[in-house]
Structures are given as structure tokens and as C-alpha cells.
Amino acid sequence: MHEKLFSDQGRAWIADLPRLAEEYLLRWDLTPDGPSRHGWVGLVLPVRRSDGTPAALKLQPVDEETETEPVGLRLWNGRGAVHLLDHDPATGTMLLERLDADRSLADVPDETEALTILSGLLARLTAMPAPAGLRTLADIAGRMVQDAPEAVTRLSDPGDRDLLRHCAGVVADLLPEPGDRMLHWDLHYENVLAGEREPWLAIDPKPLAGDPCFDLMPALDNRWEEIVATGDVARAVRRRFDLMTEVVGLPRQRAAGWTLGRVLQNVLWDIEDGETRISGPQFAIGDALRGLT
Ligand SMILES: Nc1ncnc2c1ncn2[C@@H]1O[C@H](COP(=O)(O)OP(=O)(O)O)[C@@H](O)[C@H]1O
Ligand SMILES: [Mg+2]
Image (cartoon, rainbow, N blue to C red; front, side, top):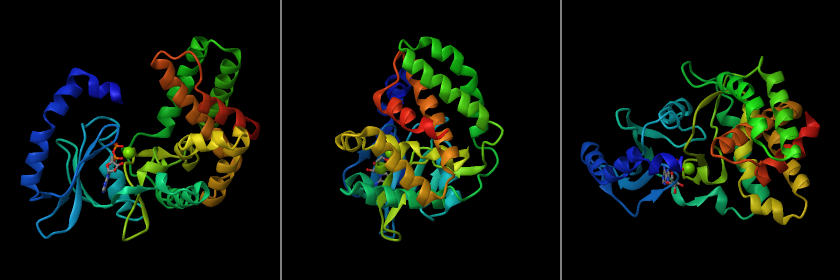
């Protein structure tokens, strides 16, 4: 994602940001209300609407990843996720309900508490059927299975190759049942902010139609230092996995299988970037869960 921002097109987009922000402040009758925030791709500006309501203006380049964010937010309509107040498809600019940018689930010190809250949200979000026209896990998983054999040859370590082959085999078996729910695809701790209507609300979805079992990874591999600090990585991974499958109500074997699908996806992305090893966290998660598949 960062690569895109550092391309010529990305640079041009950034150079144009102040003008773009100004345009939407005028068009939607907004007043800036505090310092801006940015994540990987977006710029988020706290604003007030003309009636004084706090809101957040999110500017991000339109691409395959970002263009469907409003589709997800509209479907959830505030239930477990931030409200979408306005949207301009021409530039991808969104006006969002204001949440507390200084309080995310990454700031909740008790990991079990944070994960339980996140899992409760995940259960609600992924209970809804996805509308037609979204990217589908069926397509994405099919392509991953096709790309896997070539990717395996790029890995330098026999243990890595064995794990990737195993992941591809498991995903191939799951292909006939890819699911049809609305997935968030990126529900990690920083993408859940404190709100007032509800104590915690999801932001920043990358909507995908598929099996909720595919949505566990971001909460497994984020806050990774805490997994390492337990001294038993495999056990800590399985503890998170057990908690999530229990709260979301997912069949364990299937959840482990689709999580290996996320390992496969992450490794394919890394290989595309020139890596020749599976990263520590991805290997540890794959290794900890393959016994369940
Ligand atoms: N609705 C909101 N209210 C307040 N702050 C927000 C809101 N949405 C996003 N932010 C702030 O902007 C940051 C980046 O937003 P996010 O939607 O996660 O974009 P990115 O795709 O760049 O990660 C968040 O981590 C948070 O600090
Ligand atoms: Mg984010």
C-alpha cells in the first residue's frame, strides 16, 4: 500500500490533498476541528458540520481496496460500525460519524478484553449477507491456489515450502464453499475506535464477500509482541484462535483452514515484494493451526 503512495500518482495525490480537503470543507459545509490523522492510505480530518455535529472527513485515493468501503458502511448502517454520513464516489472522499481517534482497542491493556470486544463486533458484522458486485473470496482464493505452486519455488527454506504447500492444499479443499457474508477483511485492534452510541465501533473495512472464517487473521497477527512475550507463541496463537472461534461461533476446522488461507495470501504478497522467507508471525500462525486442518 505504501508503494502506491510513493509512486508518481501517489505523490500527485498527496500534493493535491490540501486542495481536496478545502473543496470538501466548502462543499459539505464543514469546519476543521483539530489535528488530522493518517493511517496507511487515508487522511482523516476532524470537522464539525454546520449544525455543530462532530464528524470526520476521510480522504483516500480511489482504488480496488478503498472504493467499496462505503458499500460496507452502508450495509452495516451503524450497527457495529461507524456511520457513513456522506460520500463522493468521484474522489472516494467520505464524511464519517466522529469517533474517539485517541482510543482504539490497541489501547485496551487487557488483551483478552480487547479480543473479546473485537470478536463480538466481528460476529455482528459478518452475520450479514454481502450485496452482489463485491470482490469475492471465491475469486481471490481460486487465484491464490493457482499462484501457489510458482510461489513455493521462490521460498528458500524447506519448512517454509512445506507450510505453503499445506496452506494451498487446504484452501483448494475449501474452494467449493467460499461463503457469502460481508467480511471486513482488516479488523485489527486499531480499526476499532471508541464511540458514544456504542462503546466500540469498527472503521476502515475492505469489504469482501465470503466465509467469516477468513476474517480472523488481523486480530491474530496484530499486537504480536504480546504473543511473543508469553514465551509460548504456539499456545498464545491458539488461545486467541479459541477465543475468537468461540465468541464468533465458527467451526474450528474451517476457521483454521481459512486462516491458513490468510497465511497463503500474506505470503503471496510478500513473495511479490521479493521476500524468500515466510515472516515469523505468519509461519508461527500457520504452524500453530495446521494441526487442526
Ligand atoms: N470516524 C472517525 N473518527 C475519528 N477518527 C477517525 C475516524 N476514522 C478514522 N479516524 C482516525 O484516522 C486514522 C486512520 O483511519 P482509517 O480509516 O483506519 O484509515 P487507514 O486506511 O489509513 O488505516 C484512524 O486510526 C483514526 O486515528
Ligand atoms: Mg486503519
